[in-house]
Image (tube, rainbow, N blue to C red; front, side):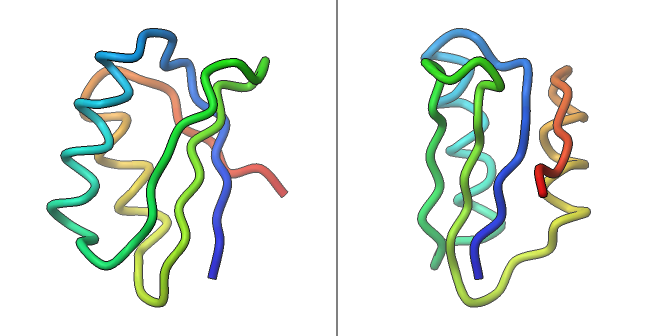
Amino acid sequence: MIEVFKTNVHAGCEAEKITGLLYRHFPGCKINFDLDDCDKILRIEGLIFETEKIKFIVNENGFICEELE
């Protein structure tokens, strides 16, 4: 399963922090940001993860996170 999210994460250090937090909750997933994209894409690939929990974690850290379809 792959999910793609639009965020407002701009700095690499912010992306690293969020990625680290997400890996703690979803250790078997591939997680990365594309900060060069205009939507500051967060991409998560794996067998098991919760979309709502991902959005909650990102939002809890002060960033916007919306699913792209």
